Amino acid sequence: MLVVGLLAFGVASGACGAAPDPTSLIVFRCLQGIGAALMLPQVFSIVQIEFPPERRGRPLAFLGGVQGIAAVVGQLLGGALLALDPLGLGWRSVFLINLPICAVGVLLIPRFVPESRSPAASRLDLGGVALAALVVGAVAVPLVQGRSAGWPLWTFASFAAVVPLGFIFIFWEGLVKRAGGSPLVEFGLFRIATFRLGLSLSLLFMLTSPPTILLLMVYLQEGLGLSAIDAGLTFTPAAIAYGLTALGVGRMGIAKREHALVPGIAVTATGVLVSGVLVALVAEPSALVLALTFGVVAIGHGAVIPALTGTVLAETDPLHVGSASGLLATAQQLGGALGIALTGTIFFGRLGTALSPTAYGEAFAFALAAILVILAFAALLGRRIFVLVNPADVSPSPSASVPGSSAPRT
Image 1 (cartoon, rainbow, N blue to C red):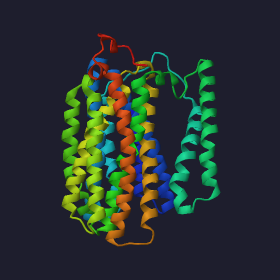
Image 2 (cartoon, one colour):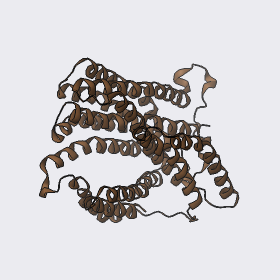
Image 3 (cartoon, one colour):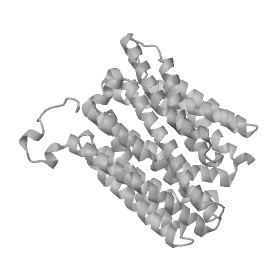
Image 4 (cartoon, rainbow, N blue to C red):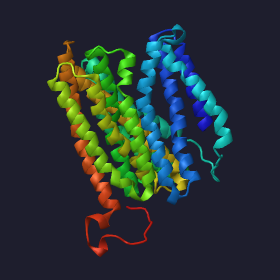
C-alpha cells in the first residue's frame, strides 16, 4: 500500500505538471491527494508494527519531525524552483520535482521496509469511506468557498448537515461492526484517553500550523513584495530550528513525550504574539527579523508535532493500528485545511481591497490573533494530557497513580 500510494502520488504529480488548464490541475490535485492519503497512514502503521511499545516513541517522534521539516523546507525549495525556473517550466517544476523523489522511494521501499500482513485480511468499508467524505466535505467546502461566494444559503445548509451526516456515519459503522466486518473507524480506540485527547489536540494544533506558514508567505510576497526565493529563504532559520528541536524531542523517548506539549505550545504562542505585534506596528518589517520570530514559532512546532504523534499512537493495539493511523492522518490534514480556510477568511476579510504593506500587516496581525486564541485552547488540552499521563508529577497522593501499570489510560 505504501508503494501504491507513492506511485499514485508520483503519477498525479506528473499530471499536475502537464496540466493544460486550471480545471485539469484541480482534478489532478485531487488524485494527488488520494495518493498521499494511501501513503501517509501506512508510514504510521509500519512504525507501530515494526517497533515494540518500549521503542516506539523515538521513531514516532522522528516521524513527526520529518513531517514538519518537510513542510518548512518545502517553502524554501518551492521558492527556489520558481526563482531558478529550470528548463523554463515555471510553476510546473514544483510538481515535477516529485517524480524523481517518488521513483527513489519506490525503488528503496521493497529493499528496506519489511512487509507485514494481517492474519485476517478485511474488506474496505466503502460505505464508511463515502459517508466520511460527505461529513468532511460538508465542513471543508463551505469554509473554503464561502467567503469568495458571499456566504450563500447553501454554505449554511452544508454546515447544518454535518450533525445528521455524522450520526448516520456512526450508525453505519455500528452496523458494519455488528455484522462482523471491519469498520473504517474503530470507535473502541476512543476509549483510550491518550488517543482521544491526543487526536483532538492534533486537530486543534494543525488549525494553526499550516495557516501560519501560508499566511506568512502571502504577507512576504504580496505585502512586502519579496520574490519567491527571498520569501522561501526567510524560512531557513525556521527549518533549522524545527529540525534541531524535533531531534531533541525524539531523543526524549516515549516516557517523556507529553512533557514537551505545553512548553512547545507556549513557545509557539510567544513567536506568534511577537510576530503579530511586529507586523501590526511596523509598516515594512525586516524579513530577517520575521525570519527570527518565526524561528521561535518553528521551535514550538518542532516540540509539539513529534510529541503529539507519539502520544496518539503509543498505546494503540496493533490490531487497530490501521484505523488509528488513518484517523491521525485525517485529523492532521483536516485541521490544516480548516485552519487555512478559517484564518484565510479572517485575513482576506480584514484586507478587503487595500493592498498597501500596512493593510497586509494589519490583516496578518488579525489572523495571528485568531491563531493565538486557538493555541490557548490547545494549551489547556495539552495540560490535560500531561496530568492524565503524569499524575504523580501533579499530585503527591500515592493513590494518584498505579506504579508499574501499562494499561491504556481510559
